Each structure stands twice: as C-alpha cells, then as structure tokens.
Image (cartoon, rainbow, N blue to C red; front, side, top):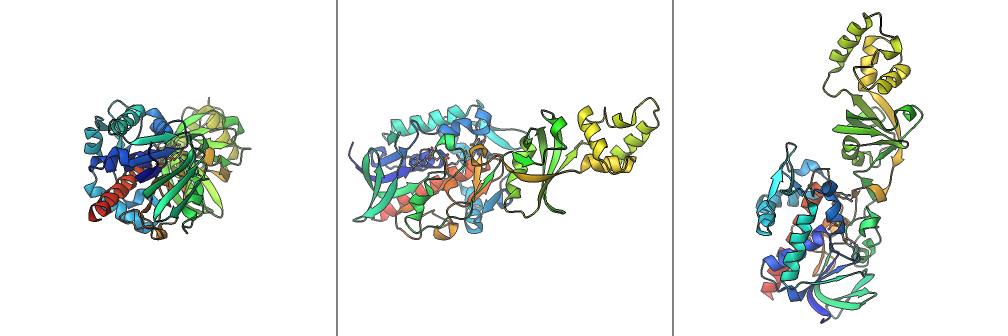
Length: 400
Ligand SMILES: Cc1cc2nc3c(=O)[nH]c(=O)nc-3n(C[C@H](O)[C@H](O)[C@H](O)COP(=O)(O)OP(=O)(O)OC[C@H]3O[C@@H](n4cnc5c(N)ncnc54)[C@H](O)[C@@H]3O)c2cc1C
C-alpha cells in the first residue's frame, strides 16, 4: 500500500465512514482514501446503536433537539433540508422505516445491516481501511498531513478527524484523541456524559430496587424545573435508569443543585389521582399504608405514603407526582451514549466542518461540541457532518 493518500479519515465510526462514502459517492477514487481505525474493525459502536436496531435519525428534526455550538447547530439543521438520509441509505440498499415516536431505523431493525452496507460500499470501491492502530499524533509536513501510528506514518493532502467523543471506552472512544485537534490550536469545551444513568440519594429508594414503571422525569436545579421527559424508569442500587432518565440526563450538566423529580402515573393528572385516593379512603377494608396500592406498584405506593408530609388525598396525589431525589452524579462516560461538549465550534467553519486553523483539516461528528437528544439525533449529526466534509473536499479538489 502506498502511504500517501489524498484524504485520510481518522476514525471508522458513523461520521468517518460517511465521510469516506460521501467522497466515493461524489466520484472520488477509493484508492485515494485511507480510513484509520484503532479498533480491530470499523463501526463497532454503530452496531450497538438503538439496542442493536440502529436508530439512525428522526422524522422530527430541529435545533431544539441539539446542544452545544449554536452556529454549527444552526447551519446543520438548515442544511438537513438538502440532506436526504433516507434516499442515501436506500441507494446503499438499506430502506428505512419510522416508528410512532418518529425514530427511524433500517427496515430490518438491525444496525448490522447499516454497517454491512457501508463497509461493502467502501471495500467494493477500493477504499483503504487500516484497523488495529491508533493515530497518536498528526502534524503538517511540507503541506501534507503526517499521521503517526504504531504501524508507521501515513501522509495525506487532507485529513478528516472523526474520532468521536469520550463516551463508550469499549467502542474506542475514551477521550484520548481530542489532542489530535488540540495540536492544531483547537480548544475543547468542558465535557459531560449524556444519555446516561443518574446516581441519586439511595436511602428512600432502597426498597424500590429492580422496579420498572412508566414515569415522567423532570430535571431541576433547586426549585427551577429544567427539562421533563416521559418514558420508563428503573430503580437501581445507585439511583435511576430507563429511557426517561436517559433522555433527561444531559440536562443535569453543570447544574448547581440538581434533582430528579419523578412523576408516577403519567396517564393521570394530580387532580384525578386525588379524587381516586379520596374514593379509596371511603373503603374501610383498605389499610391506610396500602391506600396507593392498585393505583401504582405496591412498594412504590408504600414508599410514597411513608414519605408524604401528611396523608391527605391532596398531599398523597402531590407526592406521587413529585417524588424528588437529590442527584449525586451519573454512571460516567463509560456508560454514556454521548459526550456533551467537545472541540469548540468557534474554530470550525459551520458550513463545511473545515478547521479555521489548518487548511485541509476537517473535524466532524461527536468529536465536536454538538450533542443531540436520544432518538437518532447523534447519528444524524455524525452522518451529516461527515458528508459535508466530503462535499467540501471534493469542491476544493476540483478547483485545484
Ligand atoms: C450504546 C450506544 C447506543 C447508541 N445509540 C444511538 C442511537 O440509536 N441513535 C443515535 O443517533 N445515536 C446513538 N448513539 C450515539 C452515536 O453512536 C454516536 O454519537 C455516533 O456514533 C458518533 O459518531 P462519530 O463517528 O462521531 O464517533 P464514533 O461512532 O464514536 O466513532 C469514532 C471512531 O473513531 C475511532 N478512534 C478514536 N480515536 C482514534 C484514533 N486516535 N485513531 C484511530 N481511530 C480512532 C474509534 O475507535 C471509533 O470507531 C449511541 C451510542 C452508544 C454508545
């Protein structure tokens, strides 16, 4: 293999594979592209997405689902109007379907189908993929990028940094690769694990361990309510988990006085619950401590009853809708699906993802200070940014 390429992509994840595919799609020769992936194979994380089903995007898109650099998010959500992910995947042989919540998956509901298609497309078109070696350093030498690995030095005219964030060490993303961008003068914003389990005070919830229920989860900073999410909730020995918790977790970043407020019985209003409790109180065969059983899980009912200020229908209904737990942390980057924060967007052209500090250097995907909500939003940004970098590379190459 020749060791000088027109484009080198660092990281064979969602954004890196899409950058390489975007180049080939626009007529670039695969033999001019090199993908360097530290894992023994590309796309390991992609396989795990959406519980193995691959939640690739969402029919509901907009700025409100993203956090981080406002300029990049604005340009991206505008640009999505001309980015037809559905037909792009169709042309790769992967038709997409959406569910009632707007989440979009491959029709087979197998993330593996997406990886197979991308890998097949790249290899059929002769893209060079080198796995098992981490890019340890990059610098510019005589106008080319020199990429240092344990397998030797590779050179390229342009480089796309698609090394992901700091979450999911087992997928090759341990946060050690930000230095590659920092060595060109890029700055990193503070990092925080998002889409992650939440650690809370545990005394009151000890009896609830293992109970799963539908709930509304609100994140608050003291009394100020920040974000509310609906879904399932699981009590654990460290705090709470489940889809509603995951979705709300990123909103805890950098709060001074963080709490989660659990609203049980999402399908009932507080007033309706108060009325039901009043009616139940007239039934003299029901023990007072059991008054909430039948309405909610028995152990949840007893716990809420125990900690409710007075035992009137009004207070009990309020307690069921506002079970407040002090947050003590989260289960960390290793368990998080996404990293909040990353390479500061100020150093990036928001339209092309090219570095403002080094011509021909591109930074895409989760490596950047952009993160999305749960529901396909992170992969969408990864695919889009990888593809935009490819588009710009082609545009500039044709002008030379
Ligand atoms: C369990 C799980 C489930 C998820 N489910 C979903 C979902 O359903 N929908 C959704 O939208 N998002 C989901 N996400 C988030 C989504 O997968 C990521 O946001 C997305 O993959 C980011 O793409 P990326 O290309 O920027 O980074 P990644 O996909 O993380 O890829 C980065 C790649 O770079 C490689 N790498 C890093 N450093 C180097 C280096 N120095 N040299 C060589 N290679 C390097 C890594 O090994 C990795 O393969 C999930 C995440 C996890 C962990």
